[in-house]
Image (cartoon, rainbow, N blue to C red; front, top):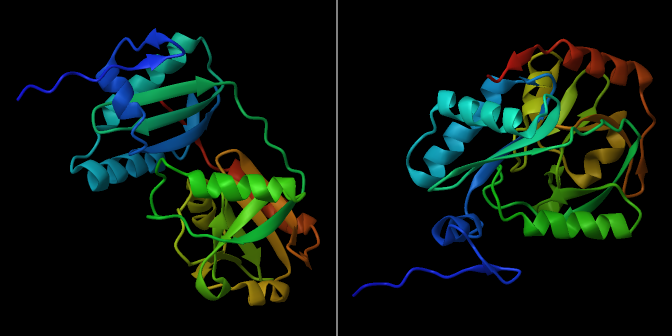
Length: 252
């Protein structure tokens, strides 16, 4: 039996490639997000490894790093931008690159609201993030900047779009509950005293300081729920200095 091709209209206009559009709308895929400056990105090898590993896990085949770099460089040149926020999406039938205005880091102190939610397959930067977006919006409505995702017994996992690190006076403690190892987190772990360890909501008052990281940058945390943290200026300067030492890798 012949199956008729899917017909898709967007705002009343037929999609030029219905099969591709259907794939993009499936919500089954993965991505990486990068801040690009002068055609370069920090931790490029980590971004490429993330894409390759996720594609292999989701679709049974890896991604050629050279092709990813070529397509990303082509999209940057086509946009006319050398500084940009770039995302590379992996679908079974396509690689999609989006190029937007660069994000200006905001080092303002953050307020986090804990929520009972852990992302499925949290080790992947996958699509279909309704849960984390829902909780992040709820946190914003409650006057917070970010949601802190937690599992059973209050196990701290990660932020909705960030990794969370707690300072015990000697090292940064990254919670070991299911989470995505962000590129910024991985880069800092190579350059600072760090450990991966279980952390619960009940443990939060025992830490001296807190911060969040993602591709957009690093910011201190001054409160999680009702637990306050001072901004440790010396710690933040040390973390920022370590991050600034990371080289910028050319994409093209």
